[in-house]
Length: 180
Image (cartoon, rainbow, N blue to C red; front, side, top):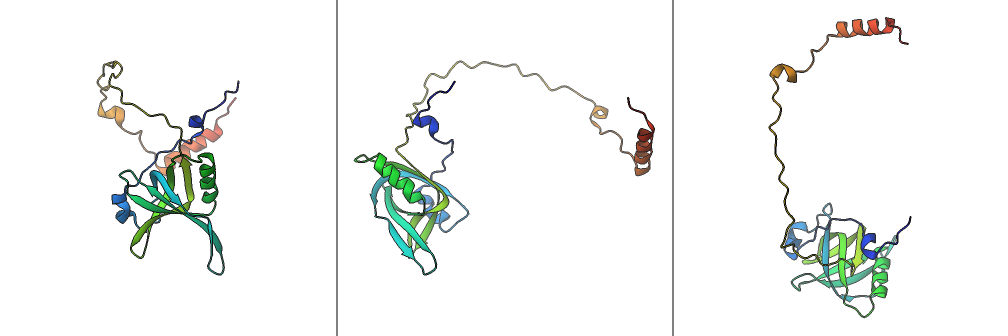
């Protein structure tokens, strides 16, 4: 039997590691350390195309407010721009809360910004229900803990090791046995 899924069930299971603005200095130019951010979208630019002579890339600049209202710039590159455009189209005229995963902190002329990687994913206005603290925890079942079994040292020793000659003799005996 097939059951329809909801948006909440479609969300991939992922543990976010949200980056705080205080950690930007520690993570700056650490390209091996990917981080995630959560913030409200404030502004975004049009898609711009840049060429360095051999390759051409597209990019889009975003400005998001992190918790605490500090604003940070995020540079989107490549295919992630299409994901972002889909989020904008689906949430027209609404405040958009973004989760951007697998980003790196970069610095240019003393200004820190966030940049996407090939692993970056972007989520907008996820349908995650608010979780309230449980002031009435369920009854706790007590389990009696039994002491571990006692063994003597002889029970815990390894079986005696064989010399190479003894091992060859046992193998020769096994070759002579007849198995039915």
